[in-house]
Length: 381
Ligand SMILES: CC(=O)SCCNC(=O)CCNC(=O)[C@H](O)C(C)(C)COP(=O)(O)OP(=O)(O)OC[C@H]1O[C@@H](n2cnc3c(N)ncnc32)[C@H](O)[C@@H]1OP(=O)(O)O
Ligand SMILES: N[C@@H](CCO)C(=O)O
Image (cartoon, rainbow, N blue to C red; front, top):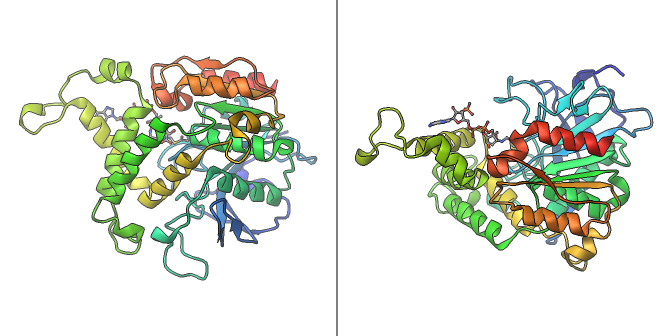
């Protein structure tokens, strides 16, 4: 089957409305027909998910793969940088002709998460009816809500069962929710650097990040979207803290040590290299990400507990029928491998924990693409 550009992929009739023509070329939108009932009560009207696809959906729709991004990722999982995409796809090394997710064979779908800010409905979106942005009134979401929205997208695409659902970190939270909420629709499962439930420490790091945003004077209760300003300083602080947790102590030490940044003097107002590095990542995120989305998604991650109302993690994970691989990164201090050991032990179709060897910490699931490709290959073979 030849690879075709996603813009040419014939899509089946949708139950929701489709919107074509985003300048980057590939992004499409799914608009839900009905409001989404929320786990916390109430419902979210006007749900839209942005998504991108690669490859061709087989006539029997058996070759669809769902790729779920992490906290600040988006639907641009593959493909080059370009207008609307300042960076190449975050898993470009894995998705494409001849790659682990070979788009000559697989139809790969990557949605932007509900609550996000890269085309899907989130706090920066207008309320239905063309009103002001949701802002602080955007409802509390959980990963189950986000997965329920993704199930609507799957319905609209005519995909009854994914051949594979794969995700890392926050994407792994949604992937495991898929396998528990919709076992018959999850053919295979690859969980990377993720957990059955957000831990006390993960909630603690997240809390500091959310407070950094909410205490920024430009937060305005989350209703800043049409003020021309935003809690950029708070978001930058949140990213600095988060980024340290995404990497490992030895990596930072080997890479930066105590070196000053260029000719700057840390004893008189200048920065160490590592400070400059964090400044860079903070500024980069502030340019591309909405602070209120960051809060909504972070709180959704805090709410992640696959066992809630299902007899705990053991009771929930027993429902998974998919052949499963669970992998952790050996240097991950944010999602330590003990969390993936638990997942592997409790999912019936999983065997021993796989370990991605990396000096880079949690971000290893994004960086060590050769090792992740080998896991994908093993699971799909
Ligand atoms: C799907 C998802 O999960 S999220 C989508 C992808 N993730 C992100 O975009 C999150 C932000 N980025 C990251 O987390 C990481 O950069 C990764 C995981 C994508 C890639 O990691 P690495 O390749 O190891 O990149 P690293 O962390 O070294 O950062 C490199 C950047 O730091 C900059 N940098 C390095 N040292 C310094 C310094 N002393 N001062 C300032 N900047 C510095 C580099 O110039 C480079 O800039 P650029 O990214 O604008 O080109
Ligand atoms: N660097 C990743 C890590 C979160 O898992 C992100 O920004 O989404």
